[in-house]
Picture 1 (tube, rainbow, N blue to C red):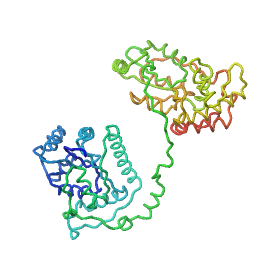
Picture 2 (cartoon, rainbow, N blue to C red):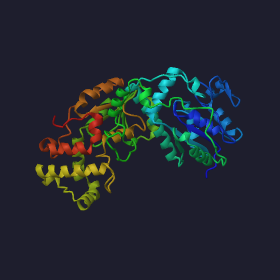
Picture 3 (cartoon, rainbow, N blue to C red):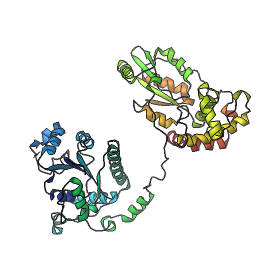
Length: 465
């Protein structure tokens, strides 16, 4: 059993955290110091200090209070909500000696309870005789915001525990009123003498069903029925994450101004490079350090990348696959292992090429979903994944559509204070077998199936539209 030196209850308003804190404070040698890092108070309302640390001292440096909590006699901790001081959160999460207790509640229950508490200004109840009664009005957009905040915080907590090889004690609102669960929590904390009764200082404030607590319950039912609770409309993404490929960036300088091109290959690199060379000196082969230096030297710099239709991307990637020497081994695997027909471009009819491209795109879907033995090559990786990789350094200031290169390159140059030449219109559809000659609804459907996220994220319509 782990030996803990402190603890934190990750909870939210109206999840039963007051009741859970009361139960924990009944354990011998264990103390929970309330909402120690609530920006509006220190521990509890009307307090000016906690463990000798004043509110102003905590706000200046929250680590002083966390250190005081950890050093206090016995096992000490606090409650932490998602809107509490974020500066101390990393200290809690990274410390394996800090026990993590994660308290949750049905989000619609916590939302309604929060609305009632705000209406009555009653946040705790010690006796039913002093209870203030009110109802809540459900507002769909307000609840969605509430739900998103809760889910985002829970996902962040789960990921932080995963990457640091820690686990937490999960407890639900109803569990906090179960004496057996509370005894299990006590043992997990290392306290052998668990509680033999629930705290008597607090009672449930609103025990009625939701239908009695919400003024527009029928409207709430209808709104919740329309919400995608299980995220059924989500497009799954199993494509491996990529690095930003900083060495591939190309910078162009003109006096103190600068433009940075972040290529999504296969791209119209040579025409764009020629255009950049007419602006000024090019800088390439960056490291993350030299890229930061370049950005500091070029105040007001702008960056851009060029996205293209997914079907055209697959078409150009397939041409490269068929033609480039570095794909010799890949071609062998695709022929032998996946029975793909990979024709020679010089001796291939448009019809045969169209059939081969269609088979390749069908294989591509499996490849992007991590279902093949071959890694996802950057030439056919989804553009949304590539842009996510760029964002690890900095997202480009502008996404230029390939068909708008001439207009948009001039615009991004003017934003950076660069005098740029006109860009000569070029077409990517100029290979040995143009896509225009072989397009079919079947190819379009296959590309949409393989690149669902790109079609959705960037609003691509049919290529020939």
